[in-house]
Length: 369
Image (cartoon, rainbow, N blue to C red; front, side):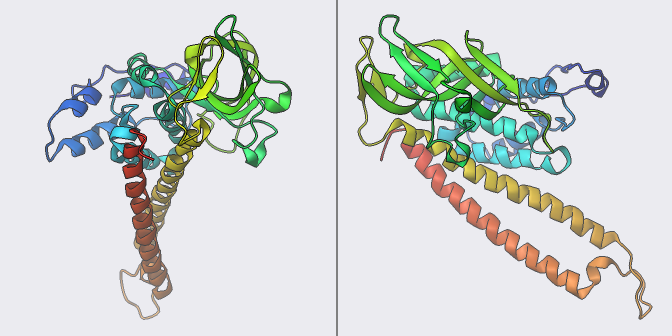
């Protein structure tokens, strides 16, 4: 479905095979077809096919091209975090299966796009902004999440020095990085993204409203990016710093499901039960579950490789018995049994967290707080 010819990859170019009949239009079909016993199995097969050829050796551009095709396939919809959270989390688990051999780069690219960037649009965007997610899918746009700042360190989210001031004369917000320490830092997918959800400290007239989210076109005048350089792993993923110098965005760029700035420049909260930044924090909850699941899936892969080696490694036997392998050593056999039990318990616990969070995510779409 999302095939890349190895010869062209070695040449630094990307070529796509035409989608198979199985994969073509699967997202829309799976969203509308009636429930059947094999629907989820078919979706799983299609998603695995679509993500089976990414490589940790890909360039930023090649990796981004794969991601764009995955977005356009519609296999995972941008609204699945709300409507099908089970599928949202399953997609993350399926991607994690290849992190052992290919590194974490593509998995991070995927979760930044679906969870952090457009998951935030889903959480704090208005009806029109959420509806526009269909256009993102159709065009294969990529998004990034510009929260972390250079001087914030571990206080990311608590320290937001990027500013957004409302200009009533033009009905625009003006974004600025007041100093280098306010540059967004280590932003995954920041170089290739078409759009960014940018967290900025909002001021409207004399009212300082605190951190709010804006959906920003990365090609806007005044947006500058730079490469964070090579990493110890995951170099198929681009990481960028982002700076803003008088970047003007329309009033509609504010993700305003729970707040409003009218043309004259009056700010108000439209839902007193929750602050906009608290809603943005929901992405961190879903992200933590997805990261935990990915870590366990990674651990399972490493464990399976280790156990397979032990079960096929011949060892001498002082009693002269034939066919003895490393896994027959009593101490190692006990360690494997203990590891199995611990993994089962951890996976069951994280699955219960997913179930509880999924129910909350579905309720939150109606703001039942």
